[in-house]
Length: 155
Image (cartoon, rainbow, N blue to C red):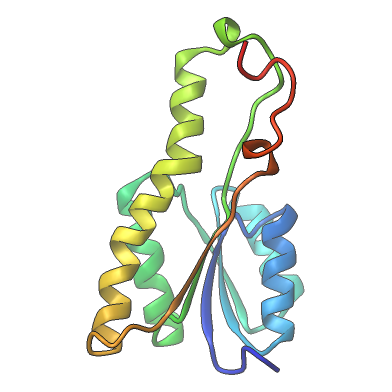
């Protein structure tokens, strides 16, 4: 059990890769906060993972939600060792001029700003917990679309 007694947050943990990460972390001995904007999905994943998992509705693009997520992990599990920034959204392939600005803003907020918000909250916690010696692990997930773009996503 490689993650025995570790505490993790997995954003976007209610589906897809996030759900798989939650299940594997729990199987490896971790306690996991399943953070997802879809509370029902997060609850389903947490229930399936057993008592080592707990669900929380979190919009990772909202600073107050991210702060609450960190506090919830610490309150329920006593500390935080691992943060998996997995939440992400996409859009259907389309010409650039057809992508509404509001949709672009949401993509940017969830896929990029959310990582900044989470890091702003977790880094001081990791520093404080380890008296400045480092500690804690952050895994930032990204889409393969960043290195292998699909037609009609840009122009």
